[in-house]
Image (cartoon, rainbow, N blue to C red; front, side, top):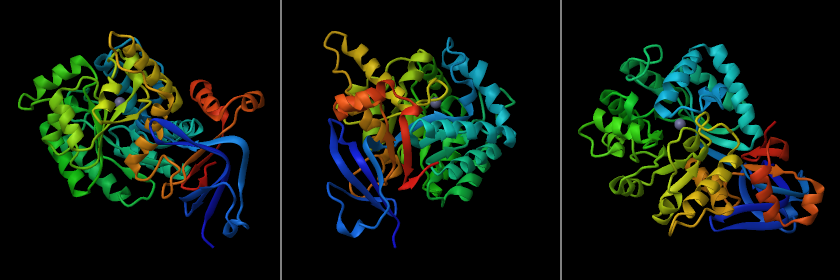
Length: 419
Ligand SMILES: [Zn+2]
C-alpha cells in the first residue's frame, strides 16, 4: 500500500498572487507526499485510509523563508540602533565565532529550528557560520526535525576580524566537504554561501563559482542592501560594472539557481541580469527597517516581472515568524504608496504567494496545493467566535496579522506530520 496522507478541512492557497483559491470542507490528498488532488467527496479508493479531519480549521501551505541566519538567532532584537556594517562588527562576528564549538552550535541550532517550525516555516534557505563543523550541526538538526532546507556554510576571507576569517583554501575546502557530504540528501541540501562581496577575495568568489558549477549547487548571498555597502563594493572591485557584476563575473549570479537577499538599490543593468537569469530576490522588510537600509520597491520589481520571495533575515530582522514579514512587507509598501503617484500597496494574497508558492519554487514544486506539489501544510486554529462569524479570507488575514505559533495546530512536510 502506498503512503497516503489525507487532510480534511478548509483549504486555502494561492495559485496566482492576485487571489486566494478556496476549497471549503474538502479532502486534500497526497500519495508518497505528492498532492494527488482536492476533492469535495472522498474518492472510493481512499475509503480505508486514515483521515486527519480538521473540521472548520484552515489548511494552508507551509511557509518558505528564503533568507535567515541561524547563527544570529541568539542576538535577535539586539544592536538595533546600528546600521549594517557597524552591526556586523559590533554584534554579529563575535557571536558567529562561537559556532566553532559543536556543542554550542547544536544547542543554538536546535532551539532555532524548533522555533522556526513552531512558527510555520517548513522550508528555509539558511546561512550558518564560517565553521564547517558548526554547519554540520545545522544540517543534522534540520534533518532530524524533518523540514526542507538549503543550508550554507558562510564563506569570508577578508575584511572581518581575524578570529572569524578563514584562509581562502580552508573556506573553499569546507564548502566542498559539505557539498560532497550532503549533496544527495533529499530534504536538507547544501548551498554555496559567500557572506557578501566585501568579505570575499576575488580568489574566493572565483573558487565558489567553480564549486557551484561543478556540483550544480545553488547560491545565496546579499546584494545592494545599504548605500555605504554599495560604495564599498565599488571601491573593492574596481573592474566590476556593478555590485551584481561582482557575483556574475564569478559564476555566482544565476549560472546555477540563485537567491539574493535585499537588492534594494538596483541599477537598470542589474535588474536586466536578474530577469535574464531568473534570480529570486528576497525581501526582508523587518531587517531593512531595523538596520535603516531602505525600502525595497517591491511593486516596481513585480511590475517588471522579477521574482520576489520573503525572508525574516534573522537577526537583522527580529521576528522569525514569516507571517510577521508578510505584514511588514505590506506596511512598507503602504508607505511607498502614499508618495505622489506612488505604486499600489501589496495585498494579502500577494505577500502570501511570496511566502509560499514563489519561495517554494526554489525547492521545486513546493508552496501550493496544486496537483504534483509537495504536501507541505499548516493547520491553523482560531477562536470559535472568530471562526463562526468571519469568512475564510478574513480569518486567514487575521492569522497573518495577529497569529503566532499557538495558532498552528499541525504541520506536514511531504505528507509527514512534524512533531
Ligand atoms: Zn542576511
